[in-house]
Structures are given as structure tokens and as C-alpha cells.
Amino acid sequence: MKQTIIITGGAGFIGSHVVREFVTKYSDYTIVNLDALTYAGNLENLKDVDHLPNYKFEKTDICDAQAVLEVFKKHQPTGVIHLAAESHVDRSIADPSAFVMTNVIGTVNLLNAAREIWNDASTGSARGYEGKRFHHVSTDEVFGALGSEGFFTEDTKYDPHSPYSASKAASDHFVRVYHDTYGMPMVLTNCSNNYGPNHFPEKLIPLCIHNIINNKPLPIYGDGKYTRDWLFVIDHAKAIDLVFHQGKNGDCYNVGGFNEWQNIDLVKELCKQMDTKLGREPGTSAQLITFVKDRPGHDLRYAIDANKINKELGWYPSVTFEQGLAKTIDWFMSNQEWLNNVTSGDYQKYYNTQYQD
Image (cartoon, rainbow, N blue to C red; front, side, top):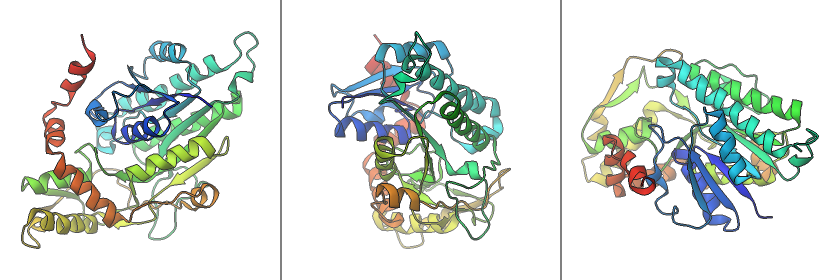
């Protein structure tokens, strides 16, 4: 079946990998990348596919309900994969309102637009929902924190601890409510920490790679004992493809890397690999590790139980964390221009070059 799929946040880190997966795998689909190109949106992430005939781009802010509806009317999507979000916890603590607007109001705007074009306009019935799907991509941070044992499952009670996770929890609830109230066909995925190529360098792994290359300090919050499950972004994109096409309507799926790392151990492994790749003496990069004051609302441990998507849909990570980390380091070291453009802000010029008259 031919489809037109709107992927929101498609110029971002995870979104660009999802766009690439769909554009290259489904040549008979039309993929519409809807992105506002805020600070983390970078069209250079898609330079290898933006010339393909089944790729379209719409510069649109999901906070603008009318603009969103116009895009939906123009392209008449059969599916939506919603990744557009403010996603940095530290930024949410500094400016929670921006997270409410994008992550909550923006999600509702998308749901309303989908409902309007998918419903039978004359009767208000849900007959137009047949063959349609709204896939909402969320985070494991909505579940709060774990102790030293246990895992987040799809049935874990929500318990967000930061403005970011609270805004994502609210958006999850709205997607479920539109399914329960209006019959909106939907699936929802909650993922663990992503890493890999094109990662915006304010996040831990790319920040450390960049700083090691430039012999700058590696800032580690608190005592470094914070524990996270890490998911290679390309594996996540394949999981989204699988859930979008084969997931059960109205259901949710946890997506994780089946691994846990304390931040300090992760950074030490990163330092070890970087020393080898840079030809430095073992232990050189680890000397850059600097412990900094902890941030408010910092959850000690997240860990995903991804057995449901594994057993029901057959998804499993393709790499171990060490393998994925090596691939990530290789990508960043081979794409110094991308990294320099992002850290300098020059990446924003790409849009002006490509899409402005």
C-alpha cells in the first residue's frame, strides 16, 4: 500500500535516522519531514537523501496549529510518526514553558490535524481512520527513577521528575486519550537513551568525544553513578519502522538496548577507545574527567525491559554498546566538519542555502 507519512522532528537526531530509514527502504512512500529547525534541527543530517524523489520538507512549527493543519491538508498523510520535541532535561529546568508548548500543545495540534483530515467530515465518524496510524515516540523518563534493581515495563506507573519528562508524560496521555475518546489509531514507543551518528553535541557522548579531541574537560554530574540503558539510534529507527507497520493498534512498546552503564564507566570506556583511535597513551583522555555539581531532579537509574517488542515483533539491538560506541566515535571523527558546523552554529546556514530563494 502506498503511503504518505509525516515525520515530525525529522531534521533532529533520532528523526533524521527515521527519515533515512523510511525514504531509502520504502521508495513507494512519500515521506514528509516536518521540522521547525530549532537549535537541534539540522538538515545537513539528511544531505545523503534529501535529493530523493520521495522526500519532502516542510519548515513548520508544531506549536502553530493552523500551519500544522495546512501541511496535513496539503499532503493528506496516511500516517504520522511524531518525534518533534524539546528533549534536553537541563534546558527544561531553565525554561519549562517551552517544553509545555512544544511537547504538549504541539502534540495536541498534530492529533487535532490528523483527526480533522482522517475523520469523515460530513458525519464526524471515524470511518476515515481505516489504514491510518499515529505513532508517538516518547521516552523512558516518564516512568521516573528505579532503585538498584528492576526494570521499566509497559505497565510501569508514570512518575516524571523533571519538566521535560512531565511534558512527555502529558503528551503520552493525550495520544492515548485521543485513541480512547475519538478512536484515533495509534501506537506509542518509549525508548531509553539514544546515541550514535548526528547526535547533538550538548548530550553526554558527543560532548565527550568533541572535548577529548580538543583536550577539554569531560563534565560528569555528581559522583558519576547515574545509570542509563543505551540504545543505538539506527536500531531505534528500525524499531520505529517495525512498530509503525506491525504494532498492535492502541498498544505501547518499550525500546531499549538491553544494557546498563553508569555514566562514569561509560565515559571511561569512551576514553579508552578514543585513546586508541587518536594514538594517545592509555589513560590520557581519562585525565580530562571532571566532576561537576549535580543538576536538580536527577534520576539515579533508568532501565528498560524491551522483551515485549522482542517477543511480539522480533526486534533486537544489532550491536553491543561497545560496538555501537566504536561506530559512533568513527562517525564523529570522520565528520569533523559536521561537528564543527554544529558547535559553531553554521549548520543553520544549510537551510538558507538549500531552501531559501
